[in-house]
Length: 371
Image 1 (cartoon, rainbow, N blue to C red):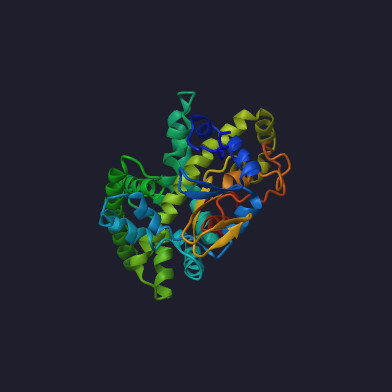
Image 2: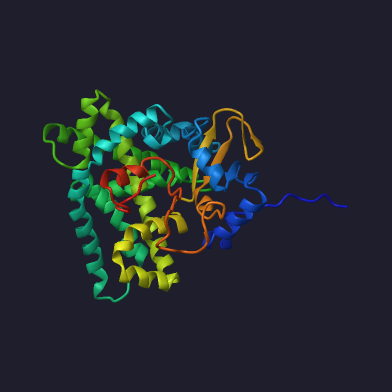
């Protein structure tokens, strides 16, 4: 008799790209700690495993080796400026460096600062909606979710309007390679990311120098002051800025259309929200849980370990399935139902990290979210 072949789970089929949750369910039930030969890393899909892994100090957030691996046979020097910028990012750091940098980052997200940015958010949102009002229809992605977050963050940074387009383009080039799985165009992505890192760093340095001479209430002024008070190297501040810009941009860009789609697919929940707008904070949390904007975060095993009965060797790449965990019936009642009044809603969202800066600083849900 032929030997039975192990099941395969292809995350990149057209069906899975449209709706990954049936495949996540299959993985959770059949192989919750799964090694993918095709992808070259482990996949975790149960809430209990993902939650524990997010807090496991045996797992490192430093993914610099993965960026080099993405290059294949290309020389590492191709991304030397990209690595210099991203290696100092909060999201790539483990404790105690992560804790120290996060405390510093909090200085840019004070309650007073967040309240002052509310008018910026409203003005930018209204301006984008005004452009499409007379048309009677809109593309929620192209007309709102793509331009809105980057424009808001660039203005919060205090970037002159003439430089905002370039800043956003450089950040997108950096972010594209940061999340690239590899492929035939990897050299082009790498070159754009490295050049973007050079230009982005240069502009942020100019802004830092200007804010040292004439401080304001913008985020770069607040962060520059915090770094100087702590005696830290301001050369590392561009790394925090690219994290805030890219993480806030990419996740919110996905969250807005995901949330609108969920409401349109569940007209009873849309009607409930229209009748009770005070439910918006709960609704945003449910949008994040129901169709998670960042479905995976990655960690590197620093030592041999066991998860869910599976031995995982040191150096292994582990993909923590936030989206899959957020639909785990062991944690959520009727997880595949979209319920804007769901409470408690202890979803993993974007995992512990910079995401909590906005929430803790503002006391409000859904102002923005960062990885």
